[in-house]
Image 1: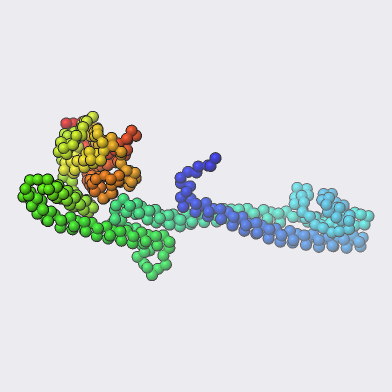
Image 2: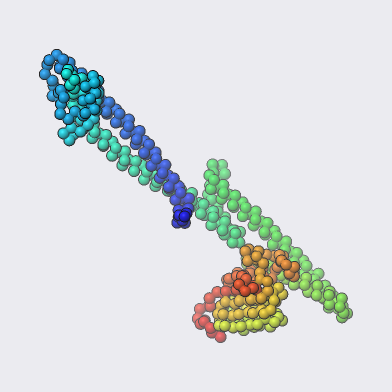
Length: 422
């Protein structure tokens, strides 16, 4: 079973801190071992040389029959057994061992009769030196690791902070705020060396500027085309009204009307794209407004008011949103189509095949329909844009038992307007 780690452990700062800690500990351990081994070897070597030198003097005195100096004796008490056996074999050697509760450097060599001549040198000072060195290595390593962590955390936090800022700007751009820029100070000085974060920020700003320019050009083109089509279409509409009655005239009038509707939709979308639409808010009874929209649409849509509400909204825009939702459900769905008002939430539901997968995933897209459906895909796009102007939330889903469901959630009531007031 795989262990699930907390989400915060996946951050770059945590990974960098763990990496720095591991590397510092490994480096401190390596340097500590090297220093410990070097100093220990040097200290033990000096003590060994001193013990062997005294053993040489004691051996000369023993062979000359002189009395031995303090610390030298034949087969002394406490002599380590390995040294005793080495001396009995005719060899000389040294060894550190505890003697009377103190660390002692022993040096032993052969004496007559298979005995061992040994010298004991106090090794306490050297042992304390090594112990103090080990303690110094430990606290200095801890101090170095702590300081490195603080400096590393500061440096990594600055980098991750810049990365988070870049990510926030990218999310704002994807949400439609094309004016958002990172504006990393390092990108303002091209002559200075730039790190990878500055390069990413500069690339994102450049991409946003390019995308904004292309979208503005597209919006201007759409608005210009729709505006230029208005005049000739007005003339066509007037001319069509003068034609004699008949089937050809009906076809001409129908197509001219469709062109005028498409042109007006394009103009409305171009205005929404500018993001400069302003509300003309007033208090509206939501249930009555929904019934007016259905009557004006000429569709056979049932209106059900579960809980009426009075809302502060722009009546024209809200009628546009609901009218487009009702028209889309009537045109592309199947009966029964139901519009439900439940407080500030309005639901339009049909019993057709439901919304296509792309719409549920990415939202409405202009001039895209599926399954041979008629239309230009502008109705739901306009409804979504007008809902955003209203500050409302428009969501699209498919009912479990079939059919498309559009849910419009309006902002909360204005001050002093009670729930359910009619």
